Image (cartoon, rainbow, N blue to C red; front, side, top):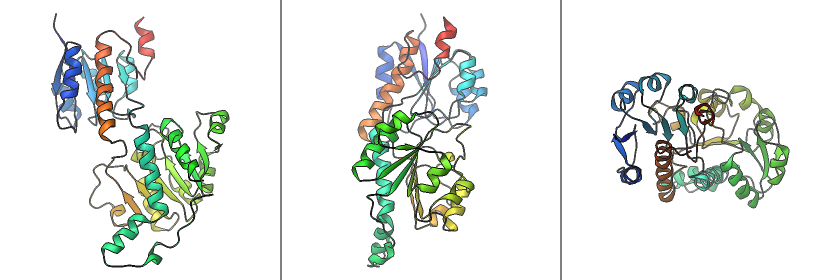
Amino acid sequence: MEKYKVAVTDYEYKNLQIEKEILEKANVELIIAQCDTEDEVIAACKDADGLINQYAPITRKVIESLPNLKIISRYGVGVNTIDVEAATERGIMVTNVSDYCVDEVADHAFSLLLASARKIVQLNNAVKQDVWDYKLGMPIYRLRGRVLGLVGFGKIPQNLAVKARAFGLELLIYDPYISDETADKYDARLVGLNELMQLSDFISVHAPLTKATEAMISDEQFSLAKPEAFIINTSRGRVIDEQALIRALEEGKIAGAALDVIEQEPINPANPLLKMDNVILNPHIAWYSEQSEVELRQKATQNAADALQGKRPKYLMNDEVIELSK
């Protein structure tokens, strides 16, 4: 019997030894590729029964061009690289890894909050330029009693909420999919997005990128924000309208931003955000620790192996494919 084949469409790791070992145990052949475009994915993965995907586009065109495909497993929480609807129509399972970096992203978001609140990066840069003047950080406000608004309230922001409470922050939540009872468990209050923007001193974005959330924070929302507010994004860049953010920063509608993700990654050298002293930029690293990388790779690969062995993958996102196959 011919072996099933799983193709890694693209990756940033030193090697794929973890993936190879898991797939070998499942008697599955590993195909290694580094694809950037739809056509590259189609050419490299034409015989694949499964895909493990990082950033390469798995569009309807790709999905309809791979006749053997049974499983698409994503390295990550979000699946915005994958046309889930097209996959579901063809009975193809789509999986993610929803729990591999909860502490890491929550810690990183809170680190960005603290760095913004205390002007850590701005003052560090000034000292290194031979300017020793604490007044450059003014104004700085006491953290206790300030308001943190959480946009989205899944596993990561729930973890962040516990950390923020320990520092004395008040919590607001915007998430249309959770109940007051859930918010009450974290001593938080559910509000609308505009009210959250209006009342928060820090806005931390944790919404997944979907058609509904793309550019959900734009000019209208920034016009409501406090001028001393900071916005922090560790989810997906396109959840925030980047041009609206730049305008808000230039016009002083908010005090600053701390971004681990932006609309175009890597960042365009001409992006105005690079020249703003009140903006902290990181290279999409919030997910990373040595432990979380290993966990991500193991779980994403196991999703593919399980699917091809006739098992239900632990992190299946489109459950309806199982029902349709019965």
